[in-house]
Length: 280
Image (cartoon, rainbow, N blue to C red; front, side, top):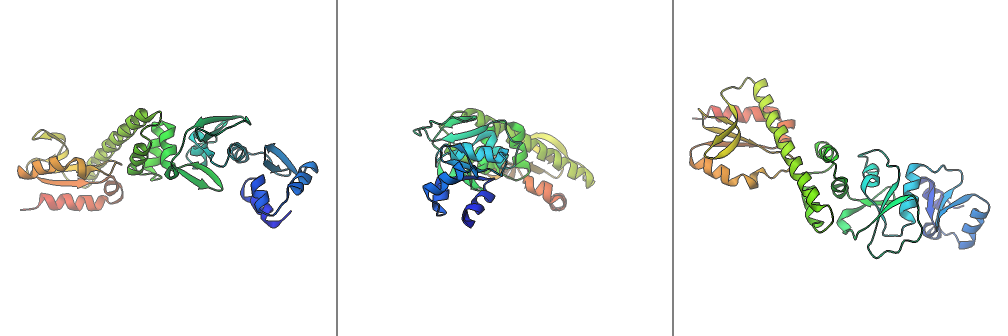
């Protein structure tokens, strides 16, 4: 057995495809001899496991995906596990193109969908759905929140992926989950701002104040200073431009803080608030 073949087995949890063996210089008869001698075990058509390697969950997923064709992709819980977001599922979840013929059945859940190139990545030699699509496919609010909070994905990447796949089933649910995640993050950002102000000993403010018909996260009425915060969406500036213009016209100073500023640079937030309160 050549060094290249050993390297493939080592990199792929003891699994190799016939096309990979061919590419490493092996002939059809050489493959057959290894199967006959029980050095290799045939796990699916054209998919082999080295006999001295156990069939582990990663190996099972590789067999499920590799045996479904060159365009097969792990998706759903399998992709979430491969990305390190969740535990290994009990069965393999495999996405294949709509017109792909799949004759060999394994213990796997198959979805037929044509995926865009932007929504497929290769991790450790296995094709899986991209992280944004994997998160959206989960339809799990806690997983969405975790992926955003840990910065594995951005809200912008999720929104872009959602728009790319607008015609897919489950789109309305994904859109609703994104909106809810944005609201949860804004509420958390607002509470973070309040905590920063209290710890800094800054008073004279009120939360959830309505001014000129606009709901402000925090307002210093005496100094006519409004504070707006953003969640993970990162689009506060675009959707608050009318609010800012209206407040500016009425003589209010508007401060805007992103999620990252609130959680990573609280001293900067305090400094800007103090400076606004002492302006002439």
